[in-house]
Length: 418
Image (cartoon, rainbow, N blue to C red; front, side, top):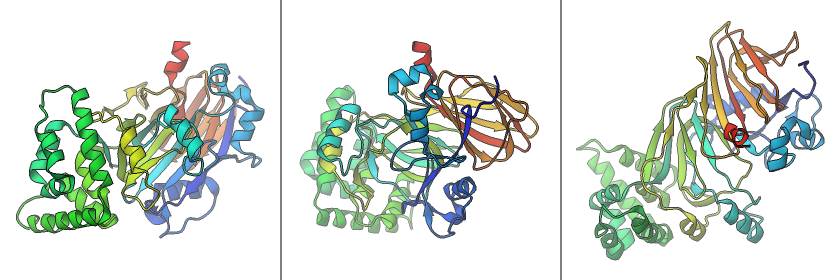
């Protein structure tokens, strides 16, 4: 197949400077955006997210002519492939990001499609689209997150060891948890967890401030005589970042997850989570809907958050990827919109990404090489480059130095099913 201008398109991408981002001098987002856009970064400014896709809040543009990717796809819908066009229309169904997390993001959840439509209709200023936002984070560095609720047994342990929580939620709620049988099935535990968590998140500010301050004082004293647990150390860190915030206490209800580079975590709709530190690539359905309730200066919608959560308990599944060949691992979440391939290609090697029936986006994070769709010359690629690849295009990559790249595309299960 000859190289047509449609097969590979270099993209210029948008950056977000949210205050939780890492300062430019140590931020992967800052480094990649500077390389991608040919503009310098500011050493001390926070750089939080690099957005790659068509979402109106952070659109990508064709490097060749400055046209937005969204309008180019609208004019050239064939590059998406028939199945994607039929299912999602002439737009990318996924949004790809790089995140550099310097301090905790808010405790949040993303609505399912039905709730997203309702929220968008009721509050279009806060909820900017009507789509759901399942997502997956794949660690570039060591990465920490709070994700999903701990088990009932673990929660009982928390209530026995953290008196400040007992005082905040009250005796009735505490007894409700302690009297629930560990052997009860999850459906019986969910309403208990919901009642207790809702009361905690809804507690008035003075009582929360008092509880957080007492917790902090006690932990700092106990730190003199014993090793604090990971969760206790985290809570002290969160308190420094968000003083007097109910999220500091809510952290005890959620699983602390630590990812090594190359491990991934996926988050379904209506699951509570908060990224804490580290850098990752992230893929999601094309949406920016977030319902927040703690660890944030932004708008909080506590009642919506507490009513929408699934209240599933237990540790989330960690994905290690499936090896496609010696250089590429594929991460396939249980969502239709996306998957991620992670490729580490030693110097002087070659790897082929087979043609798939949907679009792909490639991001080069380290090194340089050549990307080829069948023409003799190909495209020289280097760190910071982002390329859109049309459906049904085989991509061959050779490395001039060790090359790290990520490919995101529509979940291959969509094509197997049809």
